[in-house]
Amino acid sequence: MGGVTVPLPRGADPAAPRLADIAEQARVSEATVSRVLNGKAGVAAATRHKVLAALDVLGYERPVRLRRKSNGLVGLLIPELTNPIFPAFAQVIEQALAGHGYTPVLCTQTPGGATEDELVEQLEERGVTGIVFLSGLHADASADPARYLRLAARGVPFVLINGYNEHVSAPFVSPDDRAAAGMAVRHLAELGHERIGLAIGPTRYVPSRRKEEGFRAALAALGFADDCEQVIQRTLFTVEGGHAAGGALLDRGCTGIVCGSDPMALGVIRAARERGLRVPEDVSVVGFDDSPLIPFTDPPLTTVRQPVRAMATAAVGALLEAVGGNPVERTEFVFQPELVVRGSTAQAPRIP
Image 1 (cartoon, rainbow, N blue to C red):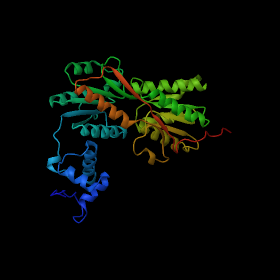
Image 2 (cartoon, rainbow, N blue to C red):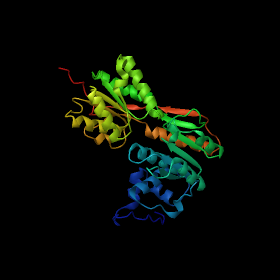
Image 3 (cartoon, helix red, strand yellow):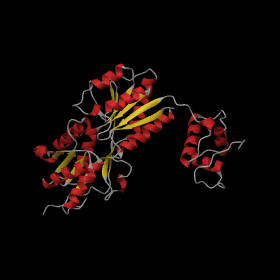
Image 4 (spheres, one colour):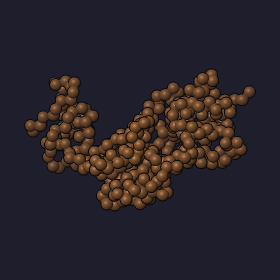
């Protein structure tokens, strides 16, 4: 090993072959691992990153010589941690920032806690290099966009995910919400559902508005739009919100329900079961996001997958362009979602 000592991970067996473990995890040779750990030249940056990632995964501490100095702090503002899609975004964004040498600072809003404006002020006091906003006030059409104009005037680079505002000159990253709703509606229609409902958040939120537009357009194309208002329920993006909306839509005879989030879809399923209905035999339910644990629900949830990794990577890239002096002007990068069919959708029930 050329004198390299690899600190053992906590709880590791002292007799375990350490260098071999790292090489196996990184899928490189032991000689390559040795060169990285010794700080030798001649190792590609991507290979070096794989070795360092293997150290982290296996629980080894990095040798002091390999601990990089941070290029700066980058704030990441998210609305909550309850909905698992937000931690999923946070993890990818933090990984991308760390890969470029930046230290992410996660800021989460909680009821009664610091507001978005207060968190931004605290980040600025700490001299952040830039800020990533995920589903923040920029997604709320009723919120004053001037806060972002002031932030730009102070020279703080930022990027905004999930929510477009034409009054803010900054890079935006979004999924195609209209296409997502259309995919879900067409999937249910292909299964024979003619009474399709939508459980969605308040229309002041840009993603909600866009999903509703996509839903209406899809129903119109199928010739189902005569009583569109009767099959749309606006509520909160939570299990409780989905439960309330689902109950109302089921009472109106919907056999297929499209939801604005996966937690809402779980609430709809709960409402169906309370009425003695089976999912998917009696009612089909489609969610949105496809956060990590969704494949393990009962039944496994059919959902529209938000392209988290691609969106997060694009957001970090746009932010770092601005940090490097090449800001992207008002542009919205729109990513295509994907319908993931699982066990919560099936052929429409036959009407006696």
